[in-house]
Image 1 (cartoon, rainbow, N blue to C red):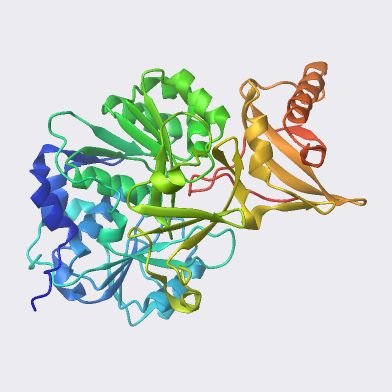
Image 2 (image 1 turned 60 degrees about the horizontal axis):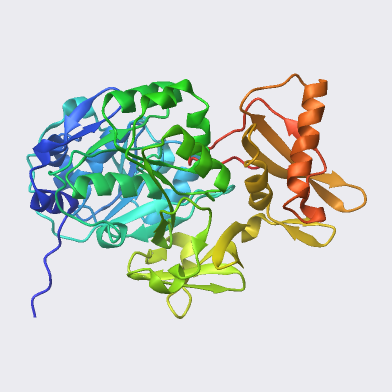
Length: 466
């Protein structure tokens, strides 16, 4: 019996239509998708990487896109490292992925990286590919998780699992330009890159070195119609006057809990846009999208979501689908991604309220206050609904009686003078706001006004306890 011939990302793009009709734009350069599909940023040396496990560690997203297209179907395994990966974790990534080569623009990797084949990519050397681009294997796409500490876990996907939620084909009848605050080496950003590439639409990439206002201005000037990011991405973006330069038709949130506060802010800022928040994770893949502009998701979604099976066990959302990653690599591989029934435990805690599941937070992020469990995200969702609040972060503070109390750092839309009567009155008002919706042990013991809150490269709120 003949086995199905492997199909690469480049092959699939060409089957979907003419890739010269759309562009991929970085902070400093714009190329047609056709240039990326048929070009080489490693001087056509892909043949040297055929059948190898290759680590990709480059700073520029456009270069990364070129390398992905060049390696898929040629490399046995492609490890996509986000640009903020600490070099101290590189040896563990190399070991877990059994890397045989590394593509990097960081110069020599040091003696610990030898005897790896090191290739330095350059988008300026983007030439027509000279080696055989025929797919001879199904490349493993390896993504790194965004853990809070320690080396990241390596999660194995393939092109099929990554693109399972994307309806392929050309959108030539309607001009769509995608953009995302995410980096395309992370799951959320990779979804948008693949969505644009496989539907024949253009894509505007962000840059870690580009100020948010500059990115928003560039996205607006490039005619972005569809844009995605985490709620924290959006809160930070909406603080900039440059957000008014966008006129999107579709705004998508994922990666964090989309509370009612941010949904309301987006509706006010982009009155013509269709808003949606999606649930996905690196391990479980894309599960569902909610388009009714209400936080949480309808209970009927558990039974009525096509191609995805979901259930809630012990308060935790579990997912089974063909979009799920196959395994972890390295030592983490000793722990299976799926349970014996094939479900992924997302560790996201949900609670059913009047026919709708509300996300409370991560199971591993719960705070114990005098024996009662508190999810920081649940309190933040309430605080963020206050009309004068831009965003908030709930954390613990040591207490000699309860062991810990919760306090909230709050960034305001318009700052107030610390210690002023206005500040004290506003702190009191926010606490009253919390008392209307939260149990007594969940009410913050103090409200601290801060000028801003840190957002990690993943687009998620940085959480630290005091």
